Length: 457
Image (cartoon, rainbow, N blue to C red; front, side, top):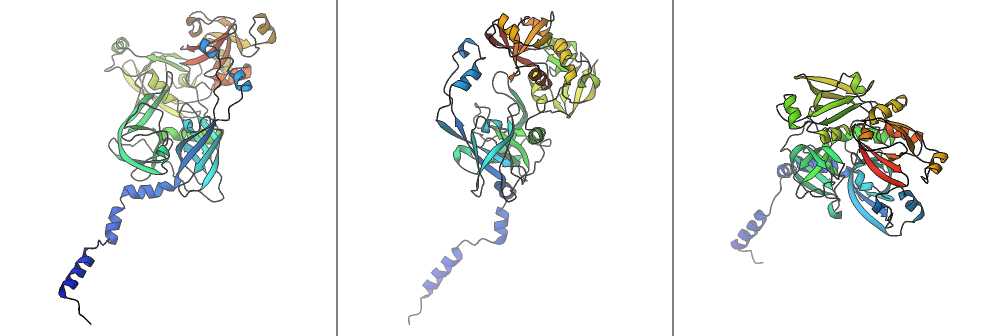
């Protein structure tokens, strides 16, 4: 038998010693906090697929500014068989199958399908959805407890700290991206009358596929919900802070909707002239121009002429910022206002309530400048309205919010803040759901024409 030469042994030793050897210590070092956060949270992140039945039929009266016949076309023009699938993401927030996602992810869906990281598939039902906050809760049913992520906090976030997202971009399931927090308290305008406030800005693109998924800190805590409502964003993304979302989530799970409260305060912008008059060092805040009697704001001591400069330690930049911030507060929320009065800064705490039914008539007259009564068949026939639905305006207070924009007696309120008003019960309910009456959208019918007006008391 031939003995291998010394060169053979030298070559064999070189091959063996040259093989990479991964020690336990090196493997541990590679499992960075980022890796551990992904391992912790991934099982609770879901992919959401929705099916929507499209309706190509269009109301021909819409081009003439009349939307009163929309329901007719919905009832008599059947949907087509064409179905469109869309996708998004969500995160399980308890072991019972409740999933937090964006409202726009599941809006108009006829079916919602959920896939977990382990490929389990479920049909989901909608528990509640809120377009103002762009948040929704859906639920899946499982025989076993499901993995979930507890909500963290977003009031201590730092610009520059590392964050990560897990979602379903472009249908690529459970994709992890990382970046940093670029800015806080961003206000984003989405459409003419919709402003979203307090967004977390990150340096990662968020598209409809990973919209609704979690934004996490390096410890794997849920600090926000990614959203893709800002279509012009390129290379940046926005997330709803979890502290903002928590109030909305509680309402959706308990009531299926958000019971937005009422402050009873009306505000206006501060221009440069007003800022100089009130001796402000910079143009910020909103001026209180009205406080309703027996309202939460009135009981807390807010007065006409006060300047609201901050809400729960967040600076108020302008009227849109004020409305956007107030949109997340619900009935029973306690809000701390920082106000300036007579050159001094003070705080007032206001507990949000619903508008009591006993106050609806007084609110309608004092705040809107209207007297109303329920429509009737007799009034509808004599005025050729074509419908007996709605609330008829019987009187307009001179120089009131309604009077200034041309509303007249005989006009009929058909919607309030896009809520149908068919009778007095609907009207009372719509008034009770007004959270900030400084801007109210009405659909008013005059004759057989309908038009939208905005009241700003």
